Amino acid sequence: MSDRLSNVLVPLLKGYVESVPGLETAIISSSNGSCIAQYSSAERKNGQGHKKDSKEESQKTVVVASFFPFVAEQVSKLCSGNVKSLTAFYEDKSLVHVNLSPLVVSFIGSSDMSTGALTDSGMLSRLEKGLGPLRSGCPSF
Image (cartoon, rainbow, N blue to C red; front, top):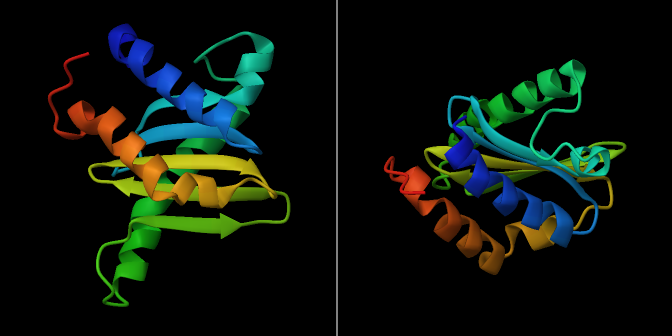
């Protein structure tokens, strides 16, 4: 990712991570699963900003980012229209994917993360507005 793009996207993700209780990581990826930007609260604690924590964490991020397109395709077979978001709850984690085609924003947090805050219409509007230039393919950052 270019430094110029990183300088815009990482603070955007950092704002979400810091404002939603229980949210630990936010990832912007392409619809094919390629990671464009990410921010983790663990990185903040380590003072590393947008750098990845470890090789293992980076590999998990790639898997998480590539998860949405496949699940969305299956869910769309229910004929209820395009998938706007998907939420999954695990024993110790929660996961929210938001579809902003051609981008996917993934949020990973604790099992008690405020998932409703991430799928709130106001939050989704902020995401759409913040990522508008990137979504249109003409970033003017």
